[in-house]
Image (cartoon, rainbow, N blue to C red; front, side):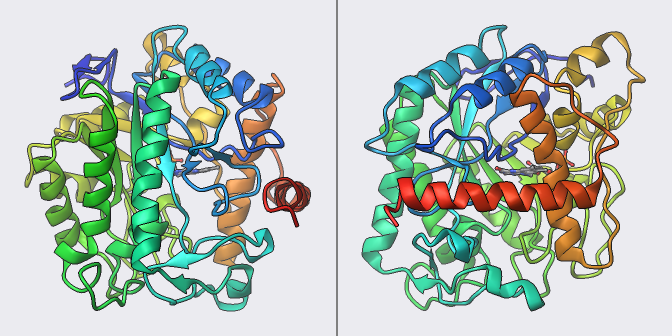
Length: 408
Ligand SMILES: Cc1cc2nc3c(=O)[nH]c(=O)nc-3n(C[C@H](O)[C@H](O)[C@H](O)COP(=O)(O)O)c2cc1C
């Protein structure tokens, strides 16, 4: 099996090949949380990359609840023109563009001062770094219905703007992943308890998104294969959720893992389970793929074509690549003529796991910013310097966000 073989998804969406640029939050929005020139430059670079599809960094469904101060939000009152421009230039060379849509739930920085809601009031546990995050409020039924309708509105507007599909983010410890996790979701109503209840919000959101868009619009879901925390969402839960999604005819499920508390998506496991050095979630994806007819994608640790083909040979339909595409936006195009070309991903092996995870993100984000200024990415950037620079930049963006969006 070959990653360069084309594929037609259930919605009818045609992809030239199976290599997908996975979501990376850019934190590069303009002053009103919309895509602007930096985002356009970055996506112009990716558009020439010849991958099957680009999945955007997560776009927020509620501007009051952001994963970061430079994030993009698309909601009922958003002006559509910048999003139309974003979709148009991303598709210029035939690559498909899928918008990832998300709500952070309790994974919102306290400094942002927005609205922090979650299935239950369980705060994030990050040892001495826990105070970086707000204490969440338990969601009321009204909050739940509001979130469902927001996902549908954002998806509808994404289609109007010319995107080929949306990916609903239900992984990495954000709101939908919080509902799925028995460690975070302590509810005793129909939204908590057994997995059919914990998955209800995700399923209702998929339903309402389906109603809001045309049948030709691609809908996919990013899901954890496991949370990598004892007592958390596990592979048995993941299989049941994938089987529910199979009945709903979504185009594919992207399997990842972890959360801010246990950043398995960076190859770090908090419950002592070993993840592969490359293609971290392949073993999980293989087991899940055996239990479903749904198309499966997996992302995490892939930077060599041989590994991408190994994933494909295990009957995984789509191969996701994130960090390596920040360092080489044209990696897929390079692989077409040089199969041995190595992608680059940063590794930060500091003792303090939280800081190491933040520094890894900072290093990658710095490359996105360089591409946004039409500069070449830098493989030898210092982790410490990037982390400090990232924190200063985020502090400035936080001030801007509070003033412009929250009016504080
Ligand atoms: C800077 C950065 C931002 C990210 N933002 C998102 C995001 O918005 N949504 C998402 O699902 N995953 C996000 N991720 C995770 C990636 O999609 C991917 O799952 C993870 O980085 C592992 O893949 P990789 O080893 O190819 O980087 C982000 C990763 C990085 C490095």
